[in-house]
Image (tube, rainbow, N blue to C red; front, side, top):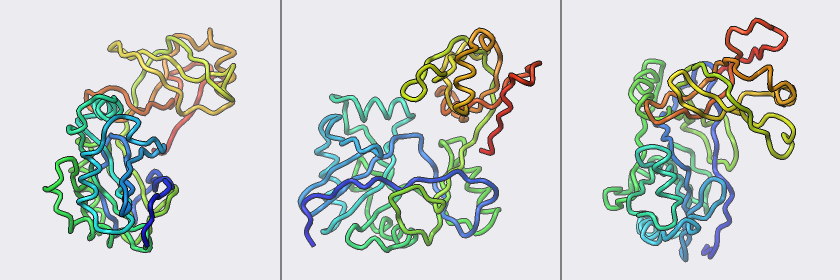
Length: 287
């Protein structure tokens, strides 16, 4: 069936792994980039970010779209990718700056969905991707993966990819693609705790007006960053109404291990060595 236009339906999203994984499981590196999907019909190709932003809003992607046309056979297809170049900041700048050189972009392909028959499981979809000669398409790269059958296999993949990448993805080989968050896909990210000093406060927006949106924090080595994650709504209102008490307090923050590319995904863990248990935020996450 020939369809001229395909409506963007979203993407499949992962939950966080808690506990040990179930086997067998497909493991992939998790890139710290921007999720991009390509929808292809017999008539057209369009690219979207996961938030439904059309790539054409960021410049000319005709050369990228042409590669997708050549890559996929007749019919209606969705190519699921992560756009990644060096690090998140470089990726965002190249993708979203209108006049940037789009030929420098790399799209790491990890899934392909036949929109005329979406009953294929992940293992079958991976086999379909392996039939594509990605060497012919300079802006596209096949995401590597392994199938882990036990904890030893899992640890090998973890040690191979965690540190070099943002983390790893664990996927059920028998899972169908769903346009929603699913426990068939799980993510594992390496986090560490750091201590920072509260030097300011940022008011929230919307329902968080007159409440804390984010702390302004400074690390021991002078890095300044915002952190609004890890707080309950009740915390946000209490802190905003008692800012003087909180200023200059030291708090522990959980951040993604990213080498030297900055502080990513910070979340409040707890107040550091706080003498007042009534005011201390005893927050701990099973990440």
